[in-house]
Length: 99
Image (cartoon, rainbow, N blue to C red; front, side, top):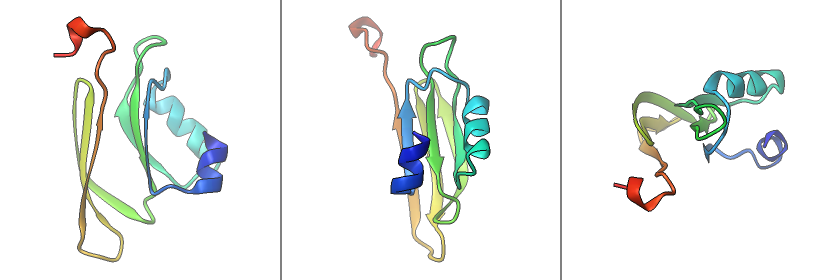
């Protein structure tokens, strides 16, 4: 992941099934001097985990809302008044739990 971030430099990246905590991911980003901010939901044990990474030089995120399986943020593109909404949605793979 860190090589992909360094090479492709996406403005936004949403990851699912991270299998780590948000804090662990923040440490990886800091250690590798990547220019990203992070918000998300921690994995439980070695299952789950959803995070959104964004480049603060390109996007300023003003507000986040988090519910089970969803992350939604409102922000704006740097240097403009154009607003953006970022949403990451993760549903359980078992048919009985998808409601």
